Image 1: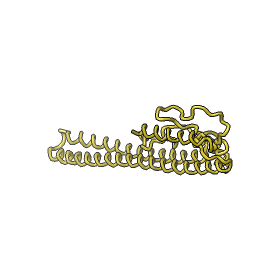
Image 2 (image 1 turned 45 degrees about the horizontal axis):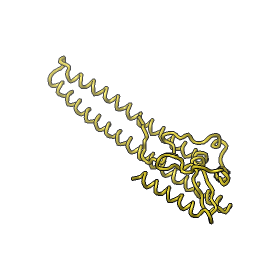
Image 3 (image 1 turned 30 degrees about the vertical axis):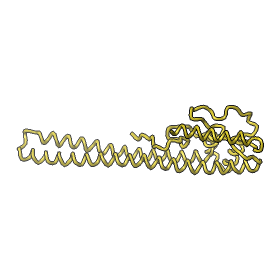
Image 4 (image 1 turned 180 degrees about the horizontal axis):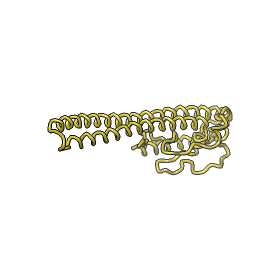
Length: 216
């Protein structure tokens, strides 16, 4: 159903483009290139990566503490089965072992809940940043389009529902990609203009809003 809607939207877009070609002035922008090369995308990705690293360390510390508690539980359980001590003392240690097991289960549940919430938080943060960046990029595209008198802009990096390129051919004559990037990166710090953002699993470029983040 999702692919069908995408196909319908794509077809409608090009139908509008071709029907209006006689009275419209068309141009294109490689939105993928612009998004990856926008300096704020790199800064946002770095912030998300840092948050993920911090959360991963926090979860690891919690897991290490849980493993230590498991070792303590095993020791208490071994002592509870020690025939060298009195039956009364063994009963006390069995109760202590049972209490320790309850603590272990509660701690494990807390870690699992923390990890799930961390995944949701990072996913929402990534989606929010992505939407904000796309809003800024679209605004820059509008500025360039209006300045040059274009009435319709096509995303040359768009794909169809079949994962093929939506734009079959373009001579690049009315491509605004570089102009848009120049406008967006005019105030970019030198350190953020070296290379585009890598399309990693946690990249902001992904349109998948599920977390897809593995901490362990």
